[in-house]
Length: 308
Image (cartoon, rainbow, N blue to C red; front, side, top):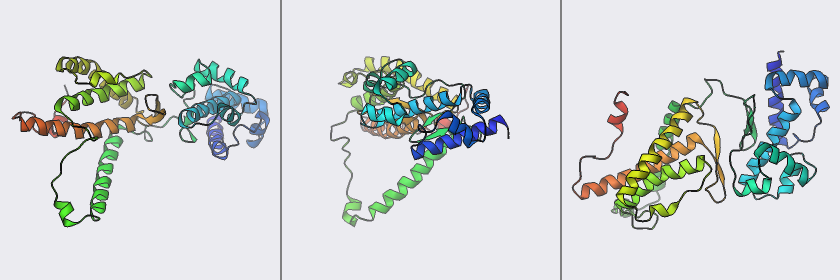
């Protein structure tokens, strides 16, 4: 068995221990004994592959899980500290501050990236596992995302047909009056939200606040200026994520209340789904005013055009 094989086994055992809640309990000697090595040889072997000793590797994973727990639960910090293997709040605070730059309580109020830089590229993967850097055949690609969105479309259509069986014929044939979020939507408000949706996610990925007030009766000049900034920035994020085949990587959206953890692929699918709904409403409204040049905004021909 090679050192790489042993490292992969170590990661698998560590992932199982995360699920069992026992990852912080075993000593370095006990971990080495599980693989029938001396502590010295085990540390050297894992370090040669991971770029960090197994004890440091485990502490980093536990801190990443602790950060995730701080974002997604209301558990007291002392409970999270104990779960991460620290005997006191002070020890946890020192370790967390070294890794994340601020104390746990401060980070919890304004969370940022959960992952701590590591040479191996192995990180805690929510909700409770570890993930080795994916091989090219295992990564979520842009084609996988498109396929997943189509699969979701087919599934959701089927579910809509299923629940429609609960309605009467009169209800099925009743004219639909669009009422979005119980507010009267306008072309202005929908366009502002289309631009704002990109701006909001740009802010979330940069761990900064989004100014919602800008969307209150926004002028076309403001819309043009914001789109010129937010559009290319958002597209840059998408191109970067797709180029790195990182659609399954996670980030913290601190703008949510409470903060949440999303994957980049999920965020992109979310934007495309709700933007399509808003674009369709705008296209219908423009048509009612005699503006027909954009049609339905169908992306079919756009996608088929060769790129420059």
